[in-house]
Image (tube, rainbow, N blue to C red; front, side):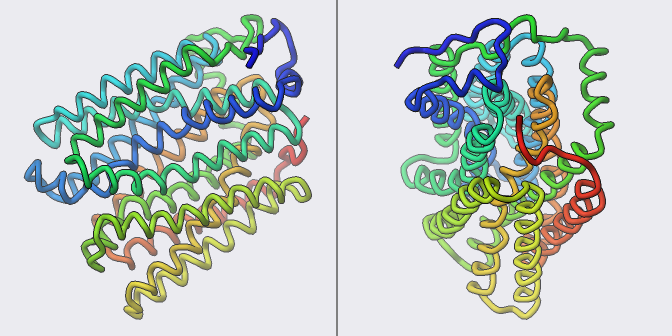
Length: 416
């Protein structure tokens, strides 16, 4: 395959249209691998929670806090990498961030205490942030119109699929290695993505389109985004959706294994079933956006998620058993696939010149809010009722933002 060259001054929304089918496929695979680095870093060791707690002689709540530490690091890393990529180009910030991830992963694998795990997970999250931010920014650099929707939907497929598929892989890894081996695996994956990006990813942001990197410039960009009510409302919808998904991710290993007695492999099977629904949702979302506005797809997806969470709470209060938890969960997780692609499309549509900063702010909001709220499930006992309550609260905020803010503001329904 001939490596594409970015021509200085070329309009990025049109340049991507000149790529061949094989080149676009290569970009999808490479950028998807970069995007998946974050979710895999966060979620791969979920099935190991009980064994990590036993190994380090600590509590389940402390282990859940290591997950929160990762999401906070990931959110902060996006806030840094996004503006850097708008000022320095996409390649260098990405390569630095993924290299930091590799070093931090090795550090966590060697951590002697839960406190060291928390520190290492924060740094690991900062490093993993590079892949997510840069991948979305590169797509916005290259594409516009329906092709942008398709490319973002494919990345959303990874963003949605990876968090629920990662524990499946993690549960299988635990059949052969202890929990520290999971982080060795993450270090190897991070190294592989770094090497591939170094050889394949071309610079998609010409020098004349870059801004300056300073505290004042970064603050001005973020201030401009925050003052856009439509963007802010969309970011809240995305954070609410991700918090719902994250409540499921943080609590489900304890709910399904400790409360209902599933094995790590059975737990992985349940995740696999939900991942199929999530994947289907992202693909349906991309097709629907060819015919209806992204906001309409968002409204439908949020409505189904809310009904699913309400059914989960009801069945939990009625003590309906394992099926009373698994079935409603599917109708909470799968429709999230409808919402996540639309959030990316609407958030980046009107901010092409600051795509990295916009992507970083949306991603940081997802991670920081989800990381702060989802541990409430553990505080309230890791029960199905606690999980459903947190989900419903997050979805209520998302619904309010969609109908009171996003629907009343002008956002781009058709990309140019």
